[in-house]
Image 1 (cartoon, rainbow, N blue to C red):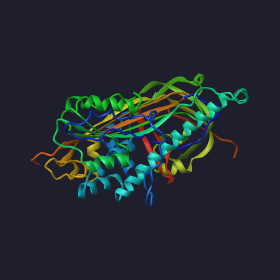
Image 2: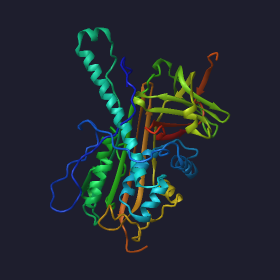
Image 3: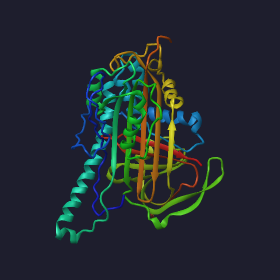
Image 4: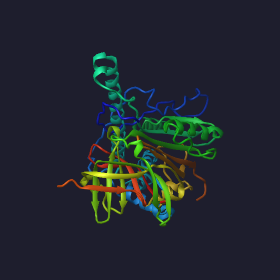
Length: 440
């Protein structure tokens, strides 16, 4: 993630995976779903239909999810959750639902209808397209410079352009189970969410999904679960970002210093330090800085309790700021107690009904319900940039037959702080890709 003489401003992209459809019987061996951009051709923007004003942003889904996590055992823990990956996986579920089951999921996600849901997904997808388009454009520009002796003498290129931003999906069926994906759902998942469908024997399902997860996140997350033999259908989303800071931290400026935990204990951290022009916001409740990453994604760090983060981001003003941030290497895992618990707190009931009342008839040939939801996340930062990933898996099981003067501001994250990585969508709303906190 070295800095380069040529840098282009971009904004975001998503990877598409194409593979065999899912089915049973004497069919050819399914090819492994692709989870990388490298073997794919140029990806195109997805259409964004309808009125997109107010979709995404720091809306109720994000704020209520973050509050729910804090209220359910994480208030005094380091953690990172991905609202984007969670919501993208829920799109796969809602797209296969019908009637009240679908209505409850859409309402919990903050959408009035399926069109709004698909518009949100397309906007996030398009951000990843723009990111990768800009990365490729920079690679081509550098290659042109290096191939021209006159230009090569004039420009100095330090390192090759590097980065990745992908949002990928896959859907899986247990060959040993009774439920199958309907052809309608296979076609829909491929068209709207670029999700290939694959059938795998139950004993091999976890290994197959974990291999896909590792590929999708460049090994940052190696597995989502160890046993899926009792799972009939699985809907999996992976979100991966690797980008350098637009203005890196000098390695020589990194120091070891104290960090005061949320329990007022003192521990030591390795801090990246620099003084630079940075977008900064401050009110009586806290302060915030925005650090831009290559190709349009940004990271924000928050001290204190700012009430309206969305407004703070929009009102942040450029100041010279003396910055001191601890390096991050954090991983988190959330299970059904948080992810299903949150949906139930938002009124989702039918999707979890195992007695046959959950209506996923667009998705499955037999009645199924959501039996588990898992998310794993990891983030790493250093002087050159940031790498973060999230994987969310929704497990489906067959229903049972039972129920002025330049002012130098300071931002020393030497006490509990929150952080999130976000991108600005084409409707000027901010989409939280990752959210977390360090408190100890």
